[in-house]
Length: 384
Image 1 (cartoon, rainbow, N blue to C red):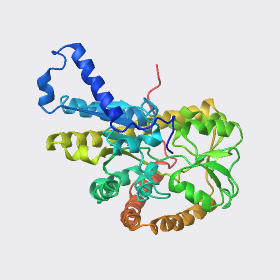
Image 2: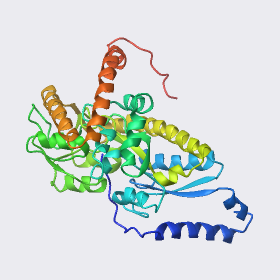
Image 3: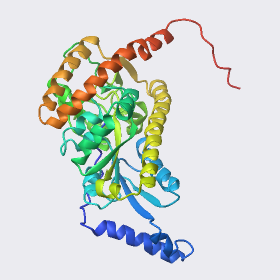
């Protein structure tokens, strides 16, 4: 998964925010004093803008940002009204963070690794090759010290951080030819993002940085021979199955990618405690809801890809996984050496990962192996 640029619009210092607020007040006045009485402003009502790095209504991700705005607006009884603007409506996806930092809007929704060129430690907060699963990542954020570390990282950006969704387990990507052996990535032209892209480069791949809308045309034109984006539902929405038929798994490069709600730090600090609690609660709900929606949609999307598009779902060979697994450790350490904050975040995740792997081996992994044994099991009633 990577940032999608849907066209660039220049930031207008102080202007666009002022325009939006003036337009909102003008519309309210036109509707009459009963619709938006003057005392309501004095009672501490706030109007915030939320810009996303996704197209509006994009399944899971875009809809998650819209749910966040709705929960905050209704949960605060209108004291904090949040309006959503999809990528390209006010700013391109790449400008979202700059817009929030400039105070043009108060909130944004994207993914931490989109901001790695500003603060390198954000790479580790998004997803790590062979790193934490979505459940483990949420456990780390909420009960393993991850929230405090993420806040420390995002203060470098001038923002408050909340985990606000997760892609769940991703797929390994689309390939015109099946990858075989440990050297499968060598010489391969592939679209990838994040730390996984750095590992593929170390494995000899020629990595292209492309926005979501550029991936399918590049595959169709033969400019790339493979691509990663997300899971079955997101991939199906982009039409990647039309240009490559080998669908490799597992998604070692991005096992679970965190989505972020980043809030201008000054705007956050000016909120009263009760509104801060509303924002916290809304993010907690959205974080789970996005993951649940994506997971449910992936089930159906995978069935569609196999039945209607004749996609061949293939596991990566173990020799290749061993190769990129070793390279992942080397690349992560190389990135962490660049600054102390990156090292601090990586060390914390690695410590948590050690315990998570130990527990998973006798919990989720053991149960899933047992569930796959060839015993007869109950069947659903025939559809009428």
